[in-house]
Image 1: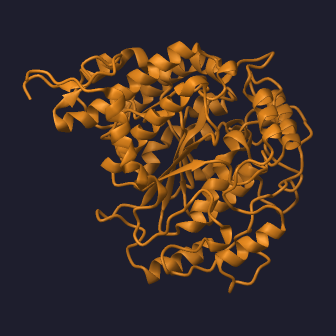
Image 2: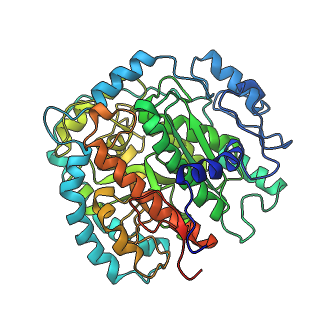
Image 3: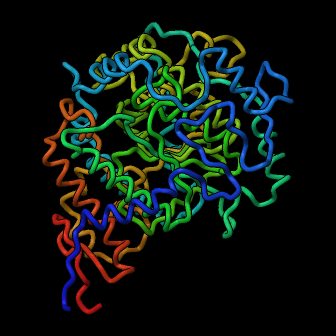
Length: 495
């Protein structure tokens, strides 16, 4: 039989159903299962290892169950719940996701800027691609950061809200607690190859998405893609459905989720957040996160575009790494203050429209909030108090903006070049010649009415990116998608 054709949809479902059990738990035995409807009072530290987490105003002898119970009394529990304020979430999506009346949408701005920015920054990256240290990877970032304050003197004076911390319990000695845990479980924070443990984290809407299940099927493809990558690199994966904290809907949900996972899994060194609409397209590439031990966060972006042009889409928070440490918790706390309520998000949106290039006055999202913080526009009355380190000065040196790898690859730049890319020798470098990820920003699978692109174009691109990535998995079995635009799978000729 020269050619075997299989039903792609059946193969996809079969390949997901059995491994899907993997998504409910960490591969770090004997870590417990985290259920999305778990009783917070039953959540304990990994396995039978009781880990005590002290908060600022709580006795260190309390366990995590006691701390969560106390947090519930403060009406800001770190637990997994469904979004209770659906009307509030929907209204925010209407306000925050539709293209603004003035200024550009994220997708429009990216389409105009990312190619030129990528070309100019790639020129620098090619000169230093042999560099392997974290400092070398961030040399352009460091140079651009030196210019970060140049525009501050001319920035408009705006009114900013006071900080409201809604993430509880407040933890102040996490580094010591983690160190004690690792000391009592030697090697638990390292893989068998001696590399730092990494957990992939992603998630999607808790409700059915799209008409006639179309978007849900696309999300299934995104999920299988991440699952394939996680299996190939021996990564645990956590998939969230719903909100961790009702104060943080929509794209803000990642902050309380990541914070919860940090406290739950002290053996994990780094958490790898990947948006639901991002496809991993270099399945062989393993991000050199071990080179960034001096940083708290690593994300994709163009430093010159951020610090010199003050562009609100110069970085992307859809795919990033965050380190499990006290700084990581503190950073999430600071980041969360931009999105703690609808009123606060609106106030910071006004700040963004007055201080950033091309951004309209609509509620701030997590990405714009980080831009404000890095440019020094995210200071609050508290952070301006004498003797308090400004948030910009605290976090700018601890965040690495990676412009050399395609940690975030803008889908429009790559989707029509996949056959050409596939014909090249695959070196697993995650660079601009073979992108690590292709991120479908602007397609908005669950809010098609506010999408920046024609759904038909988005759908075609997603199917093509999936086939491109899956070919790197199927080749192990002598199979492939001969045509990236078709779902059919066939034998590779000569196999």
